[in-house]
Image (cartoon, rainbow, N blue to C red):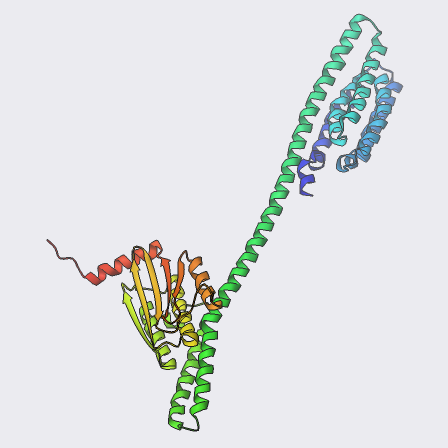
Length: 415
């Protein structure tokens, strides 16, 4: 429908066609009625013929212009080819009607092999009317040539020009429709990619928060069950830890639902969050966790802080599940526009080439890659494991860090 509205000149400018026909037919009717050289009966017959032509236009022409089947146009002009010479025979001035008929031809009929015969018939009838009235001589033939062939040639050239414009508009409209479809397809693809990315992000967040929290709850519940009948006091302490862990996990769930920063980062810096994470891991597993911070940033939590905290959480979870370590070290360092987090344990290690890591390590790598960073895992069987993530600082984060350093240095003395 969009293409048709753009290229169908006859449909969009139907009022213009009515005005054109009226602008030719009304003065022509006045001229015929005012021609006293013609008998009244002939003038009436000419006016009736003109009225029939105009009525035929009103009845058929709009449909022929709207319909893409050019047979409507062929039927319309075939009937005109019968009425037009009758008008010319009575009133040769009726040839002025071609000013309205010829443009219609190029709208109603698309193919030149149909246009040219119809156009030739109309102009041949005009030439016949002229020669029948004044006779045939070299002069009248020359005048007929000037009066008929020149306007016919101009009409053909103008028709070719208009046809080219319509074809160009049609192709442009098709291109616009194709671009519209392509844009809609790209929007759908972008939406689907966004949904997929959000699903992956939520999966990683749930794995790093809720799944780990439920694992801790399960481990503490099993430990409490084991010691419940042997040492009620110890079991009571384990149940307190179990309750606290469940509350923390519930807070993480609410934070995730509200799309906020992790609870450990709420109102705190990353260093404090890592300290709390280390203390909690030591409390729940008995494995000592040491935290080392070099050049900590301050200010509101950022996507980088969240990614680093999630990395530390996942690394500590893996240590608790697989490493059988006695000591873990978390190191956070800033240098050359980068922030690096390394989690090192003295556990049993593994062969990275043989064991590629589960969903946790995949989540760490995906999160680091999404922020333009890198993730490396170094491990040797029996010699521990190091998980290291490097992330670039954004210009805003670098500026905030510079301001914090200036603030830590204190006011500069005047010289």
